[in-house]
Each structure stands twice: as C-alpha cells, then as structure tokens.
Amino acid sequence: MNPTIVRDPMYQQINKRLRLLVGREYTFGQQFPTEREIVERFAVSRATANKALASLVSEGLLEFRKGIGTFVRQPAISYDLRSLVSFTEKARNAGKTPSTLLLTFGKLKAREVETQIAEKLLVKESDLLWELDRVRAVDGIPVILEHRYVVASHCPKLTRSQAEGSLYQAWTESHRLIIAGADETVRAVLLTPEEAEHLKVPIGSPALEVVAVGLLETEIPLWWERTLYRADMYEFHSRLGPVQSAKPLRGQFVTTSKSPSGK
View: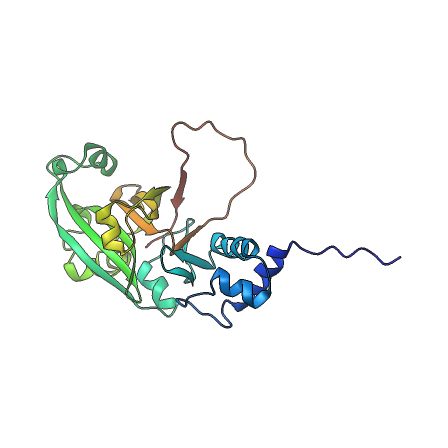
C-alpha cells in the first residue's frame, strides 16, 4: 500500500509560492499582485488568495495600504534592547543615508518641565536642561520622532550641529562623557495627528514608544527621552535569560530593559 501523502492546506501552498515572488519578481515599494490576479495566476479561490495575502502581511513581508493595494514592505530596522547603538552609525553601516530634522533646540529651567521628569533627572528647579525635538530619517524616510531633555551641566557646550548628528558620538567624543546605559520602558501606542504628520504616516498609525533615562558611568542621569519608532519600520530584538518565577505586574503590561553601552 502506498503511504498517504499529506499536503499543506491550499492557502499555505499559495503562501509559499507568493513568498518566492518577494525579492524575485517584486522588490521593496512595488505593488504586489491583487487577490484577483492571484486567483487567475494560480487557479485558486478568492478566499484562498485573501488568506495567503493576509498571512504575508502579518509576517511583515507585505503591507496593505487602504484604498491602494498591497505592497512589498521595506525590511524592518532592528532595535537591539540589550545595548545603545547610534542611529547614525547603524544606518551608515547598513549602507543607508541617515538625516536629522532638528525641530527644537534650546535651554530651559528644570521647573518648566513635568515634575516627574525633573525628579528622574535629579535636578533642581533652577538647573538648566537642553530641550531637543528631532525627526530621524533613513534615505529620506522619517522613522523616529524624539523628544529629549538633557542635563546641561554635563554638556554645557552642546551645539546645534552636534544635535543634528549623533548625540552619543558628541557626548563620548566631544564632551568626554562615559555613558553606562539607559533604563527603558517600551510600549505600543497610536500616533496623534501631530506625531503622524512628522512621521509621514496616517493619523492613528501604530508606533513603539520608548521612554528612557540615560545614565552616566556614576549612575547620574544625563537625559530623559520619549521616542516614537514607526511600527512598520522597526523590529525590537532582545535575548532573554533563563526561566524565572513571574513577578506580579500592576497596570499595563510593558517591557523594560537596561541598555548597557553608549549611543
């Protein structure tokens, strides 16, 4: 008796065949075949074509644009939760061109910021802070919106040109600071109209929000930040340790990490 041949469900078979098209016949930014075109090309039902396309969208290979169609998605940028890495350096190493649009750059008194932020920075009301708002882009595509306060006494001669480049490089090379890492909290959010405008995405688009306090070698706070990463452009990666007993959480579920190196 011949052994029974078990085949994958039809939509999975089509999924595999469509996957081969990505990178071969269709590259980043190109419109992918529609449901109707898939039905005609592979002789399958519309429901099967729809399910296969939805699967590739959920995997991040394709992206659906309402009213337009399905397109090949640009490979996501990796964010390593285990260390601080310069955005500028990472983009250049990947053969891409980084750029920064500096929206805000100036000083203000600590009493002008939220009390909880001043407390995290361990500053007095009269202490000066640098305030920066920046949009970071890769090959002209905005991917990060950043709001940051920096304790001015640690880098009193911070310049606009330094703020338009890698702050990590400026701090470590020009200001001779040793950065120990950062305490980060990561959660998913929906972009407000103003945030979406800066990142050139529809209002209410998903983003990954990182709220962090950066620390000097002496565990003294250097900066506080709230940074938004486009969810369609970024993937967060981390390596977990051994299994431990779960600790009770209050409120929302968040991912926290302490990054150990300089930016």
